[in-house]
Amino acid sequence: MEQTIFWYRKAALQNHDLAIEKCKELGIDLNAPTIDREVIRKALQCRMILSRHKKRNTWETQGGHIEDGETPLECAKRELFKESGIKDANIYPVCNYWGFNS
Image (cartoon, rainbow, N blue to C red; front, side):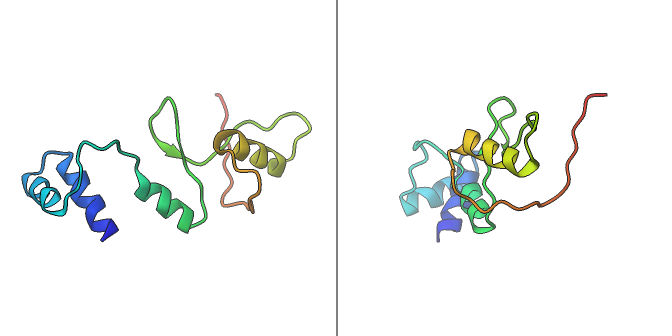
């Protein structure tokens, strides 16, 4: 039912008439503040943490630059804490990513 409510609400907030009616039937408050809990819930189920980026308004994994003398794992732990407040997590590589300025 949680997913159904999520999708009805999402459609209703985009002015879909049938979804607005269904939300009224189900007692879904369309004026309540929204947090995309579905994204967070799915991220936690697959054991990935996403944070909303301040400037781009997108959901992303934590990341940043490796400091001098820091290993990639130390950087990952530092950035995870800095951006999410999580101190104790099992961190493992998912993919290689290389960003650079040309």
